[in-house]
Length: 449
Image (cartoon, rainbow, N blue to C red; front, top):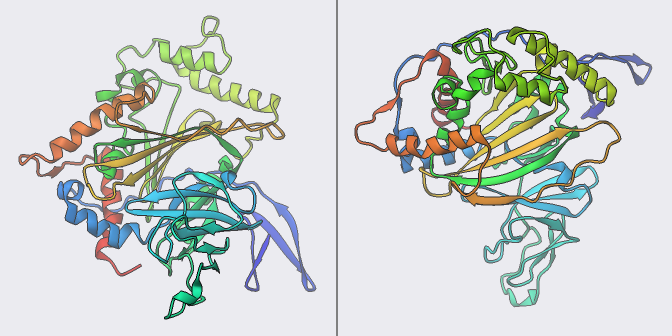
């Protein structure tokens, strides 16, 4: 329970009682991810104009009206555990410096010296007692304020005390640091809306990096988002996945800004030709869960409940509390899209995060950040943090499924630049894409945020 400006904020499900001037927590009821189907908004059926993916003019409008107004993930709080720890992050043409200024305070600044514009820190992470610009040695405290200016008396106009690193709003949720370039930004929790209630049961703050790579892809950032916001393409470029997911009976929920779909794993797609076959993919899932597929007595329909039961047993044996997750979450992908560019493939054992960042100048390029996290038993040592690496398209393998996507996306982008192509023809199963564009328009065409 946290006191804020005379009020008390409590987690959903917590009951408090006032006794005199004191408030006491009586009980805390664990919350589960809501599964109720959201009402369907009216989004229309028009073509989505290709200019939204290929036009520099549209890219610039997105930057001014949308990217500079939304909350963006900067990185992990685990990367800055101590006062003075920092890391940098880039978004479009901007670079930001994230620092733990105090034990309970994280700040975000433009990574720019106010003297002559030099970047304060190179890309990466580290530790500092203060931030000294390497150009003329202007120095700033961890709170961004001016600490030292060499030969300050030579500035005949004076160096105002307010000469400082320019700060932007910053907050944390889920173990991530978030920032917003709008000085008058709405609070992070207001922006996230239903997301914390839905995803807090996964306890992202207790999960740790096992993969951290960035690849420059030859496509627009939305082309990448689109590829992961529908399962209609599974029967096209991912035929092997038909052996272990249901790509037809997928619940799609569209909220004010964000959206999700719930994808059943551990069963056959209705498209798969032999519904009685215990496929290789299903056998591999059983094997990974610790169930011998050769002695497994059930059929394809029995795999999913068997996986769920095995997950419960394994979690109990290893001291992992999964009581806040429903049975489906022990097998399925609760796939969330946090507007505008975060994709979360959430599973009981961890999360695969995609951060899709716009290129600084070219609408036909983007940066795809792939981060995998795992949840470990209480009291266990976390795995060593992987070194962040950057690559060009095609330089490394991301695994079969993502390789199939990354092979396809540059060809989609090139095709959208064709004179013959007018826009995206979206079907009902692809409506998360149309919803994203509706929210983009809320920023581009709506009131200033």
